[in-house]
Image 1 (cartoon, rainbow, N blue to C red):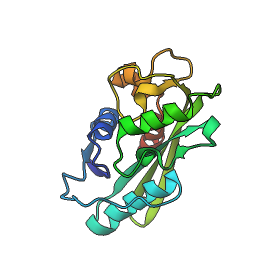
Image 2: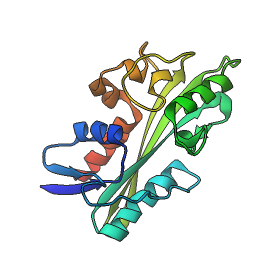
Image 3: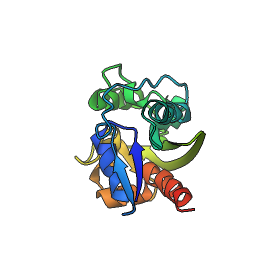
Length: 191
């Protein structure tokens, strides 16, 4: 059995990732290893933030660790909120505030194309590996659904009528950005 630490305190992310893990990998959360500090995410890219978190756990706790960072990139807003997605409406990192701000910013826009981008960074020994998953879609005009988290109630992936918040977790994981990045990562781990 392989033990891996997933560097997150986000229980929603933990649940999504746990559902994708094969039986031979034991997943530990930050709480499981006694890490209660807030790891600073001050890189200027999504990839940079994922790397910061994975390296921090490897250096301070000694575990092989993977971390992800995700951003919502909206075409009409030149890729914003991007790396600032979690704190788009302020440092309180409130999902409802972030959604409200985004819907206001897009209120008079016709172009609602957007994409979710997840980068997973894996710290093993002295190496860092990265894996990227992207899900193209668009921003709806109002919230729909009560599942998921973050921007899920207003993100509708291409080819679907439902938002991520209206989808079953298994479907979201199969077609979504985090699921795509995790598949590449797990294929790497199987080598």
